[in-house]
Image 1 (spheres, one colour):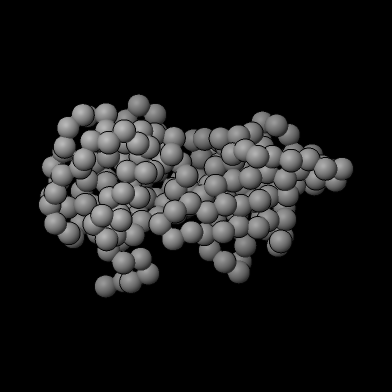
Image 2: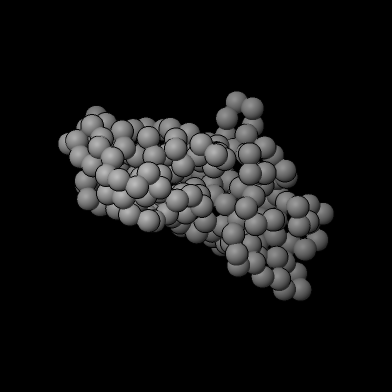
Length: 193
């Protein structure tokens, strides 16, 4: 467990509070990672409105890259501290159904990148998840999305596996000090051309 600066944000990414907390976190390849954030009970900002499920967090540590995600159960208390769980930005996709499954038929696309971006925009049409388009590789073959009832997260996993692509959702702090996430779709993650 390392001491890190943790910024807690509302669902729209606006700042709620900043605290120094002990954290552990993981990154997962083509999946979501997890963090445990331990907040001292003596911290005056350790209140429900800040530590609430659904709020966003970004963990800043000079040694590793930013880690960002959403607060989600479980949460535990002991005499000295509150430990909250958070799942990385990729987990946000679990909160939406796959648009392709709602449209009811196979939907053609020119490239897998086009399909996933179209579905990301449709998934956020009613209410945004705070995810913007990041680095997108539009290579690959045309095809058709199969209409299966599943979460958008599962649909992205399925398309990435079928078409041989990698993906991630990465946190950024924008010019207005708001936390936002970027959806990235790569032919091979970690390779720059």
